[in-house]
Length: 98
View 1: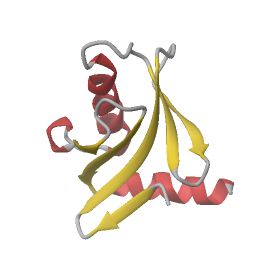
View 2: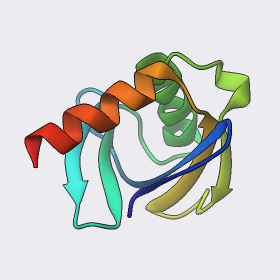
View 3: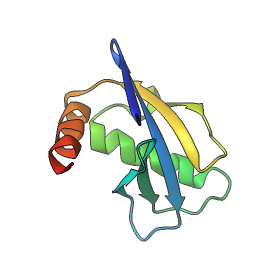
């Protein structure tokens, strides 16, 4: 499973793909992660900053509340953030597609 919800927090396993023309969700990466294209290069943390900005906008949570649980320097990362209504809607849309 690519996500986990514990009380007020959600964790999301992400397969990051830096260097894209724009930041966007790009579907599931098997059953283990969600693929995210990042509009920044993987240089000096730029891709991670862009990822946090993108997730903040997508799920309507403050950037300061998003933290890396693991994989900060890896392609597969686990991020944690407050469980939001937008994240719930995101999961429902994904389930409807599958």
